[in-house]
Length: 247
Image 1 (cartoon, one colour):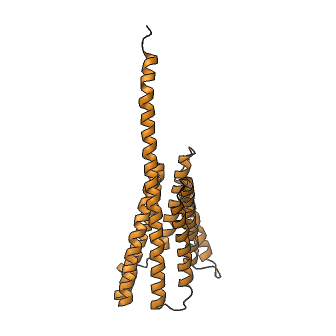
Image 2 (cartoon, one colour):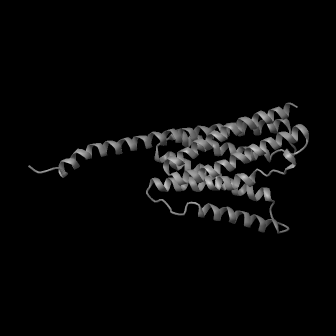
Image 3 (cartoon, one colour):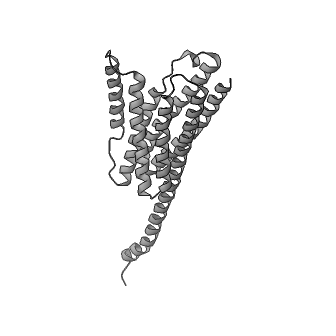
């Protein structure tokens, strides 16, 4: 029973921190480019729904021995396309800041997700092929590393050393969590405690990096709008003077 409540509390805290991080990163992308923000929102929504269903399903299995609503919920079916959309959205948002905005924002993530699903189905058809879990975990890990890498890129542009530190710590924690989870042949209270603690710390670093990036981007965008308004205000009398009558 103690393990059940530990899992429930750990999942709730991790889910809350991750949701907050996704909200801040999505909002930051929306400030950089509106359509990229919509793509990021879709990715964040899929990740959030997957995390919520997975947490509820895990708690239902531990408490009652049955799956939630009788479903077999695969978390990575949500995480993989979610992080793919988020990675493309962040990249397109950064391109828009450099005035290199692409006209086909939605095409690349759709083709990538379709390619991943097709490759996974092809590999599952092979007798000696890897499992579906390993395949989707690999693709999700790649997309996650790309998202964090782009966050570090954004932080370098804005000279945010704290974000670089938090992002690096997040990647370290996620890697450590996978090592811990595969180090035990059978689940134990020690393993559960170590994985929960590592996962919560990783989510905390992720949320911290997302919040700093969002706040900094919001301030910069506000400053740019203010400067643009001042330029227009100062230029207006000059334009009026040039357009006025010559005496």
